[in-house]
Image (cartoon, one colour):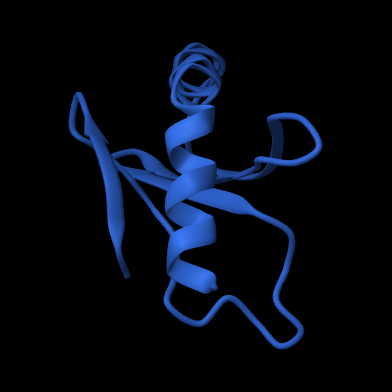
Length: 80
């Protein structure tokens, strides 16, 4: 489970085995209140939420959008 980014107690990561066939690029986010999954392509989009409230999700979407390039590069480097 490579952690790509840490922000305010949240971990942004992907699982080493992302399925067969592999799903499109996405990032998982875990915090003390829950876990969410965001698609990275074609646009940042919430795929799943388990426990975060609307305020937290808004902040997390912003972090993913601000770090989109770096997250995509990490995904491509890891899964190539």
